Length: 154
Length: 77
Image (cartoon, rainbow over all chains, first blue to last red; front, side, top):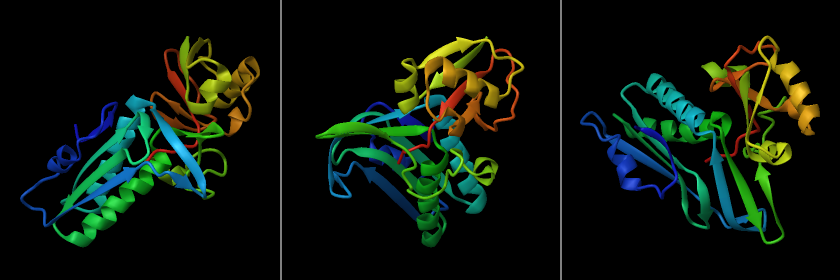
């Protein structure tokens, strides 16, 4: 179970342990946390929601993509759902590779792909209201409301 | 019958998280039109769909027993 959606706080070390391998010369760990201020606006807390079965499949897909792009890599990803307070851990990504440059690159790739194809949504709660957040990358990634064709299958 | 799943703001708009409808033989685009008017959902035509947990295009034809989920732009991470 290297890819999971968790209703409980994520055990960071447990995610790292999943990618330990004798062939690795590096493990990078990304820890995504809940930020208080976004463009000056104060967040009180977040609710994360997932289409869990599909989210796990898409996390697995990202793992497969990484193993193809960076041979010899191992990947584990846990994403939290439910109510999260400021500083809480929302996502942990661990990648091990034979050489360190690949471990950094592959880990960055994983978080960017999560923001493109994994069905997880966050609802921001502020002092003056709440809103489901979409297109967090703030790009034109979804001009037609959907990921690019290449994002889906490659 | 097929199962339709709504998430995030779509669930808030639809007022429920899943519904069962007759839709076998229809395209995703046709289903979107029907649901948008039946549940008063804004801009459903611009939302991505998934059939049985895989992203699907608007012209994909729905089969009996499918699960169709509407996937607003994601914001995980």
